[in-house]
Length: 199
Image (cartoon, rainbow, N blue to C red; front, side):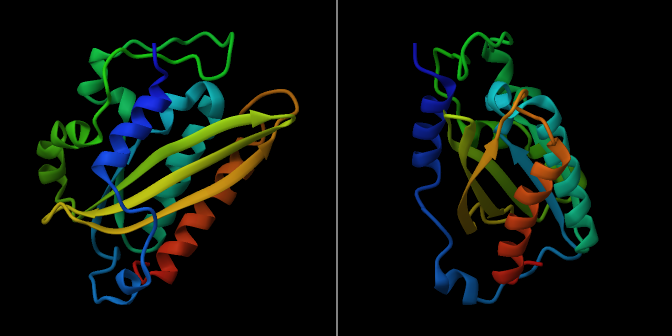
């Protein structure tokens, strides 16, 4: 059986081939997030074993609060709460990191398509997709790479994308100092959105 991570990486590579935000994308005129509704799709919860539930909660709440400070309204949909996720079985025990399995590929597009009615109901202008490209543990550190993709809801086109790399020092629990770690992660992506002119 393949891990959900491997399946997700393959599916999202097909769905979003861009590796990072291009300089000409950042310079092109666009509507910023201020005054818009941003629907956040997070797939980080498929790696809940590695990130920890407290860290995921902090990431959701801090990102929403920071976007709202920037003048945008926001809502989060976690993959496990989506309709397509009901077809998958997730192991909740923690014998080995990365012990989450599925027999079918997970489609980012399918998850978004299943939620279009709610997007329309809230008047979403943008989608922000958080995707775990990789998570690994080496020694006392957990290394991760997360892809952030901003999509125009009206056209379905990717307008901005970046992959952020980082690491956490783990002493006892994977989500210790969840608030501080989440702050570091969200500040980085918010600064990149500002640099691209979206905030």
